[in-house]
Amino acid sequence: MAEAETKHQYRPHDFTGGLARREAGDFTTDRRVLLLIGMAVIIGTGGVLAAWILVDLISLVTNLVWFGNFSFEATSLANAVRSPWMVAAPVLGGLVIGLMARYGSEKIRGHGIPEAIEAILIGGSRMSPKVALLKPLSSAISIGTGGPFGAEGPIIMTGGAIGSLFAQFFHMSAAERKTLLVAGAAAGMTAVFGSPIAALMLAVELLLFEWKPRSFIPVAVAVSVSICLRPFFFEHGPLFPTDFQFPFPWWSIFLCGAIGIVSGLQSGLLTMLLYRIEDAFERLPIHWMWWPALGGLVVGLGGLVEPRALGVGYDIISDLLNSNIAVQSVLAILLVKSGIWLVALSSGTSGGVLAPLLILGGALGWLIGLAFPGEPGFWALLGMAAMMGGTMRAPLTGTFFAVEITGDMSTLAPLLVATVAAYAVTVLLLRRSILTEKIARRGQHITREYGIDPFELTRAAEIMIRKVDTLPANMTVGEACEFFASQAKTHRIYPVVRDDGTFAGIVSRADALRWQSDRDLASQSLAEEVSDGSMPVGHPDDTVGFIADLMLAGDTGRIPIVERASGRLVGLIARKDLLHLRSASASSESERRPYLRARPPQGK
Image (cartoon, rainbow, N blue to C red; front, side, top):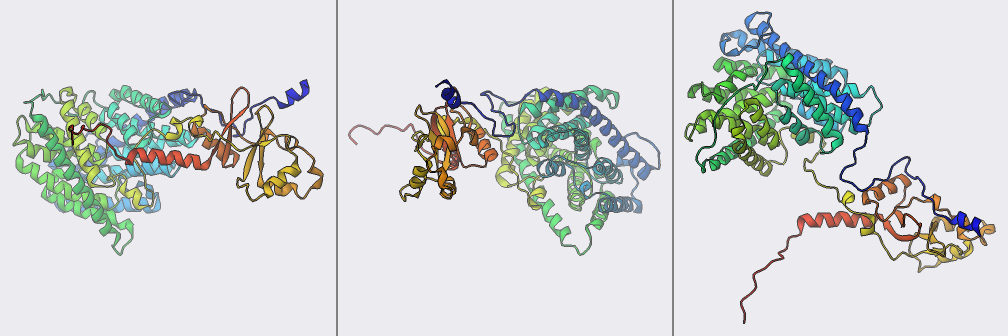
């Protein structure tokens, strides 16, 4: 008797190849995050070094090409001489970039962020050493020869490549490589702009596609390391310090929203024009290698009209914020910078979008601000943040970025209003952003809306079938074969239970067909032919997500649910139950009904 009890005693099995049951809790992060934190310290340091090298390369190429000086000092192209060289230099730079892309790596084309997103979503967060080397070099050539771009896209791509390459030396999952890739990208952005909070928010809003401690903490460590090391390589403090001393009158908050709406419309227009021009390049009867040179021709012609529209243009941002610029110059920069930036970026050259967005949004905000209370520079700042937040669909990034580059906390509330307004406009106007449209055109659609997975929010007990048709363990194999031969029996599988209700195993129609060929088994009991070790089982308190994992690991469409302590069968979950849960989740988004209604007057 004791042996029989031991034989029937419920013992849990591992059917998942090591997949652990997740205990109830807020997070799934484990101690492996400590390893990622240690690696993030190294990658954060590498991101600072990469940013320093990139910025110096841009300055070196700019000085060599335009002024004939071997110098790493940052310089403006406002003093560049209008001459045939102003047209030739961007063309030659575009030609070099086209050659580098064709014979080096095509991944260096574009402004960096879409390429980083694509590597995360499609490439398992794996980047090649070529990208880490050629991206900063090509961007330095592009910007240094007059390309109207910024350094943030290239440093995001380069820092991401550093993180990815470092991770590839170790046994890591794709999710862990993604964390380190994004850590390098955020560290690089922090080093260039001195904006750790904005870089962290950029990681969350654009690159991580999740908000988990497993990824958030290492990225935060990387940007913290970067901002601590930044004073050793760059100037300390905000890039463009201001002190606007907001608030203005209470009603000015509506003007902040108006700036956001206008910036959102501006963003939508530029995004549509960008891809219209890109479509025009696609129709050209020449190889894409030559496109950056054609884009460079337009850049050079624009430089003849307004030389300050060439290059990064950080001096323009400073002048706009401090209102140290004439109306005619702002108009010229807005029009020329928009045109050459759209054409150059559409041509597939290498460079970032953030600095141009700041200039274009700031210029329009400055012009509108002439009719608003306060300094035009304040409204220029709101235009910059709104343009960034709306175009990149990252309102928190745009808000914190503007605060960090100016060091002016008094502008936080109006910045938030402006960026959210621009965000709302672009989300409603355009299905995709300037960052994701290119990825979608390559056949990879992504969604950037995060939500709680209903499979992780729901327990097995909430969706399981409680009235389960079962077979007794003492039924013979012959009886089971007759049972399945009956036309009235429609289920393909039946759980087998002992007299005390404990789960013994599963019998399927396929088992019955197999047993029919062996008459010696006819007198055997089902208890002798099935084993609870042949089938994965769940428990009532398991998440539905874990039940789905069990189905995948066990290659089965049904999971018996048993009591954890006794092993007594209490329910069954099939694939259709998972679909019902999915349907219920979708209904919560689409079904609308009132629950509180005005009571009709008496007598009617």
